[in-house]
Image (cartoon, rainbow, N blue to C red; front, side, top):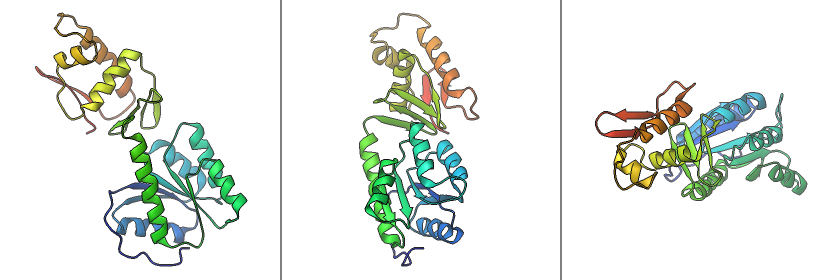
Length: 238
């Protein structure tokens, strides 16, 4: 359990935080403290539930207890990293020796905090992890709703599920995501995705948009790529 109650914190960009902690009292404390600090916190009471939530959710930072029933924290982290999940992780543990911290970081943790702790320090560390991740991804990762495109790894995921796109489909999606919430005209797509500076009176755009829509919407409940009649297309998360 933390050693102090949380003091009033300065405003920071709201975060969505996953707490994986089997101690119910400690988990409730963190959920309440993060909420009072202006963030959204989801809690999982064991490693198996936590892994499922982390694998399917879109979190800014995860706070994971090291020793838990069913599945320990290091196994959860290693499993997530093996699936390409790069969400920053702060490990909480009563094990505070140097070797323990090294083991945690090598398992895929980004920071390590020993118990007991002050919530003000934990919150500051979580905020730092979030800022670093945001700065690192700002030029390479686009997100619209639960759809994510990573230019660096040339990967696309929706709700955690990896999607396979052809090179032109990837380029088309990247352009649409860069202009999310805006109407993208056929002329804009021809000039920026196909490098045509005129309309060749072809259905190439319609064909590719149709194929892309099938890949990013099939099996998902919410449409994300919309046709704006007489104008073009729009990618939006809701």
